[in-house]
Length: 441
Image (cartoon, rainbow, N blue to C red):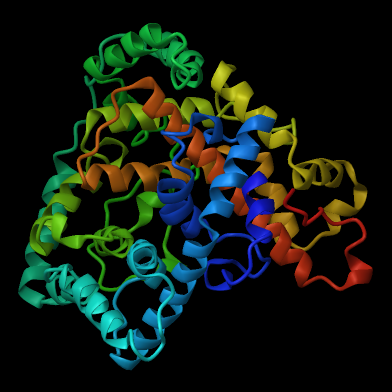
C-alpha cells in the first residue's frame, strides 16, 4: 500500500502502471523490488508491513529514482514501437524488456525517439537472439511432429505407469511441518532459525514431500479439494498441441506443452534453459512425479505450503480440509483479514442478498474463493515451485521458504484486490453501494 501511494505521486510512468494508476505487478517484481528498493540491502523496506521509518526510506528511494523510472517508461514505449515494426511477437514485452529498459535508462537517460531507434532495434535483436532456439514456436513444432508426438505420448504412458505409489516416507511429519511454519517467519529476522532449519532438513531427508505428493494420487489427500485438478484424482498428463496463458487448466490438468510453454514465456534469458527436446522429456518425468515436481526440497515446500494454506481463513468462516494453526498462518490471516475487500466480503456472506448474486458475478466469485482460500493459494504456489524446479532452484533455508510462502499470499491478496477494482469499474454506480471497496490503501 505504501509503494502504491508513492508510485501515484510520480508522473511520466504510465507505461509501467496499471489502469488504476498503481505499478504493474511486473514493475514491482522486475524493476522496483530488485533495482530500486532492494529490500535485502534495505531491510527496513522488506516485508509486507513496514514501519514509519521503512515507509519513509521506501518513498525516498523511489523518488530518488523518479527520473530513471520515467526514462525506463520512455524506453519501454520505444521498444514496443520498434518491436511492432520488426514484427516480433515472441514473448511478453514486460518480462523481456523491463529490466533492459531500466539498464538503458540508467546508462543513457531518456531516449530520443529518432536517434535511439537503432539502439532499441539492437536491444530487441539481442534479447530475442538470447532465446537460442528456445521459442514457443519451436516448442509447438517439436510436439506436433507426428512421429515425435507418438514417441512422447508413449513416454508419458511409461512414466505414468511407473509412478511410485507407496513407501516414500519414514514416519509422521506433521510435527516437523508445524515447527517449520512456526519458525520460518522469524527466520527471515534471524529468530529461531536453528529449530526451523533442523526441522526443514528432517522433512527433506525423510522424503515428506514425496510422501504427501503420492497421497495426492489417492483418496488419502484430495488434489481436487486443494484446487489442483478438476478430476476426482489426478489424471495422466496429455502431450498437448497448443497453449494460451489466458486458458490454462489447473496445475495437474495442464498438458506437457502448456507446462513448457509457461516456462518459456516467463523466462527472460532462455539460453540458460535446456534445449527444447530436453525441456519436454524432463517435463514428462516431472509431471508424472509426486506434486508434479522433481526436487525433494520443493516437494517439501509444497507440502508445507499446503499445511499453511489449509489454515487460512480470510473471512473467518473457511472450512479447510485439515487446518493447521501456526505462526505463519496467524501472520498471513492477520494481514488478509485487514483487507478492505475482505471486510466487505465477510458482510456479503451474512447478507441474505448475497445468495442472489449470479455465479458469474466477479464479486461473488472472489467471495467464494475467500471461503476456500487454499485453492487459489496452492495453485499459485505450485506455479512458482514449478518454475524453480525447471531451473533447479532448491529451497533449504527457512527464511527462503518463508519468502516463497509469504510472497504467494501477497500475490493472491493483490490479485483479489485488483479483481475487485476491475469488477467495481464495470458495475453501475447505483448497483455498487453494497459492493466491496475498490480502494487499494
